[in-house]
Image (cartoon, rainbow, N blue to C red; front, side, top):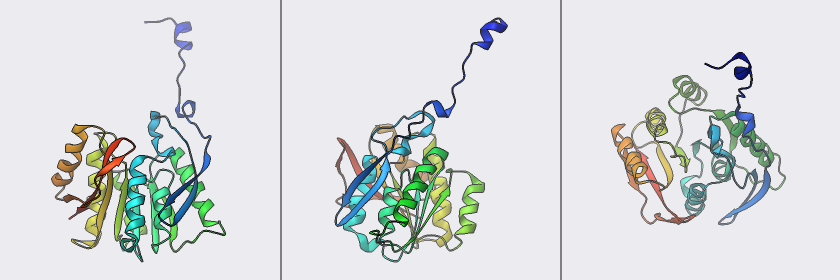
Length: 238
């Protein structure tokens, strides 16, 4: 055991020590759609602050959605792990309702800033109402609150590059299953842009979807290299 003086010298670091909020306004183009938003060029993985920048899976999903905009027209959409909001903001150009979610408070701050930025832009062609909600996967109270606030459910659930930690995958599919069951079989689907970084995660994503009674299939023609890694669009249904 140390002395009282030694114990007093111990420094505890909180989340603020790792936070980088040096956001830059960055332009992205998907088909004919141009989006400008605030994001980092790199981010710390500490305290789950990975949502502060745009990941390869978001580029993959946005490219896919921009080429298949008919999927979005008139739809109600919820995005899981929205990060800075690049996918949800693209969707808002075509959908009637978009709900962007994340669980990290620091990430939610920049997400809200980007929603405000686009909602107030004179040049922003927005068809949908954009809303931001806190949602931690597997958190029963937060899931119930979402289901109460949006009792009609959603046509589409979206996720881009959101499978990083093995422990989060069962929680992700638990949340997805609950959201899918609001509408019932064939009435809602989960579109997941997945980027392969570890073989164990590749098999875990597929197996865990099946364990939740879900069907998971590659979307034909979407498997390609993004950011030097292999990516694919999965479609997940009841």
